[in-house]
Amino acid sequence: MRVAGALSGLMANRTKFQAIKGTRDLLPPDTELWNRVEQTAREVFGTFGFGEIRSPIFEPTELFARSIGADTDVVGKEMYSFDDRDETSISLRPEATASVCRAYIEHGMHAWPQPLKLYYLGPMFRRERPQKGRYRQFYQIGAEVLETVQPGQGGTKDIPKDAAVDAEVIEMVMTFFARLGLEGAQLQINSIGHAAENCRRGYVQKLKAALEKVKDNLGPDSQRRIATNPLRVLDSKLESEQAIIAGLPKISEHLCEDCAMQYAEVKRQLAMRGVKYAENWRLVRGLDYYMRTTFEITAKGLGSQNAVCGGGRYDGLVELLGGLPTKGIGFAIGEDRLILSLQEAGKGGAAAGRDVFVAWMGEKAQAAAIAATQRLRTAGFRVELPPVEQKFGKALGHADKLSARYALILGEDEVATGLWTVKTLVDGSQAKMSEAEFLEKLRNEVKK
Ligand code: ATP
Ligand code: MG
Image 1 (tube, rainbow, N blue to C red):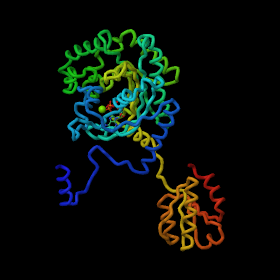
Image 2 (image 1 turned 135 degrees about the horizontal axis):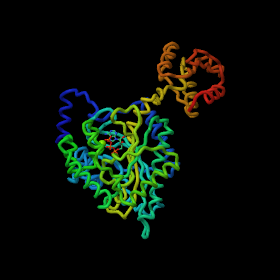
Image 3 (image 1 turned 180 degrees about the vertical axis):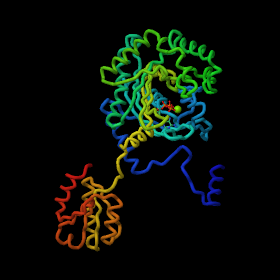
Image 4 (image 1 turned 60 degrees about the vertical axis):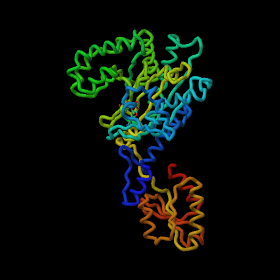
């Protein structure tokens, strides 16, 4: 019914469509940078032994509710959920970790070589207030390492191994950022312990009690979070709350022995890999399933939306979703913000341009121009072939507009002699050469 209504509305007036609030079109030349970023991710992650997973963009709502947590903003307020025609509730994915875990269980990946290393990239959807670096459709590049605990394994003796895995995952993100030339990336780490009385649960009780005492001086969001998600108060950005938060009990003083040992080992492992970090005891992740190692990376040029990557350990999530006891660690990079930061630093790259503009004149020259274009494109060069004949002046103007490097001028003369006229557009110089010579010149001078 609603579709039919929208259709008849359409015919009645000539609506000018716009992209839905919080979504946007990515256009050339920006998309060149997007592709470079994604290509670099594939290369770098490949060198660390990660394979790509492409999971669906929508999943059962229940998958996210159970894994991310019904009390979180993401599930409570930000998901795009709707009833399918058979009335099951489905949601556009707000993140991909839950999907990766679902796929791990569904495909019996515990039987694949362990630990299993997967990466993904693609759009995520959250109904947030749009602003710079915050969109309703945004893109993440992420990775997960999953390892099902074998009988007789796990516990304290696995701590050095887990810590090394955590450190290598963090090292991989930092390597990726360095490869892109991202400047000023700063890594912050923390441990949020695990859900036990002698660890995080005990700490959260103390934190709650301390927050109750200062409740009247907190803003409404933090007041609400005392009951629903007290850890989240710690990452409040509200100026008036900063001094109060500084005086709250710190989780590092309440970690159990194993979690403390794991945290110390992660720091030692990062140092061995030459990865620089700062500790931040207020770093908690927004999603319920994290434990122990948590980290965030900030970048420059982004204003208050400066987190480009968030990640952490989530042992137990796969089991929560119906799988075997399995450890997990992963991260998600905000690709939109990464791109913004690269562009702010002037790493955006120029417009695509063309290597060659084929200015052909006369009927005979068209066939030669088509053949020449085909061979130049086969050799990998970017070639513009005007569909109709243009006057010389107009052709050169056109070539200029497209930022072409060379104009290949093909007239009756060139066709007859087999010698091409090549004009270098930056300096206006012109020379005659054979096709082989021109190809040689392109190979030497054009970076592919
Ligand atoms: P933030 O605190 O900025 O809302 P978050 O804790 O919700 O981030 P995660 O769920 O950990 O973020 O997602 C990882 C990364 O994805 C973030 O660090 C950020 O770069 C990016 N991201 C999250 N939400 C958005 C959004 N609405 N628009 C653009 N990027 C986003
Ligand atoms: Mg958020």
